[in-house]
Image (cartoon, rainbow, N blue to C red; front, side, top):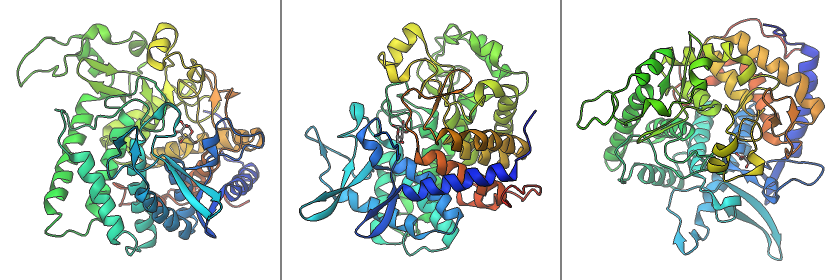
Length: 476
Ligand code: GLC
């Protein structure tokens, strides 16, 4: 391992630059800071919506603000996001379900002054549904309460009502037989067609965290007891199912290789009827002896073996993965560092889909060309997740190594949104510069290393990570 020690001077310069960008990204509404825009690219952003505040992007800014004690903007954001729910919730004549949060919102200046305009997917490229936004709102609300001890906000009727709607929406009966949540393609951070419909891991990890949050934020009353019981039950079933059915390591691969198929009935070892022939050959040579990961997606006859970083890292952070699995994922990172981190933490999805598979899964999307953007690009926003997961699994040296790489590259390269190439060495072809969550992730990752107790803001991490001495980069 090289470059483990953090150069305090380099780190200080990177931090100054990151804070300056976060400041510039502030979005105001009626005189108050209420969010951060997605990017402040000096050369006009690629798409107009980068001038809006994305709920999932703001969560990262929010964690950084909470870490620094700037709690007011987070409270403003949480409240403003709820105001958006009163907007006309209709799309193509179809009412949007109560509980759904918009992917993003912007401030519109008109004759009447200022108003907010939300995008529930009705304006989004590809009209994708932002399923993760409501979960991010809950996770951020949890972090806010945990950091401030202030329950006034979350106890407000409007917050309680929203959380209840989210739970009812996610828990309501459907045609499903699995405890996982069924969603359409592109319904989370990967917001383009990528064959990530069905039961993608990232959504399951966020869903798990949202269920956990509900249990902690709801003041139990006679009226909501049944709903809370249902949430707790679902959380447990989801955890057991993901831990047993999504996990892939050499032993599990061997089991799958010898799976019996076409089994009818309740008790069988291959309930989803996965055909061994469907496992792509790269998995066997890529999996190290020690280590493993949670597969990207699972459904009837379908196991998507791609490694999705965010889903795996969130599973560690929110406690969806078992302790042993969490260690296994970090072992995999260590063994496959060049593939999964390379020149910029972290690779979003490994490997990229190419050729006919790319045509089929992405719909020939040139933005998601092989080893670019969502299809195997490297995303600096993943830094905070990697650092958090590494601290939780007591792999501080991996966290420092990742931060060092980011500190050297990001400020000089202008805080790109993503990187291209197998090793992630090239700034993404269509990447914005001054991407806010790249900077916010750097700040938050740095703060986590300084103060691992901050991890307690996440559902499932209330017993904070013990402080490990030896991080002095902040003193510059
Ligand atoms: C892209 C990303 C999405 C992000 C948005 C704003 O659409 O895929 O996850 O929220 O940009 O940064």
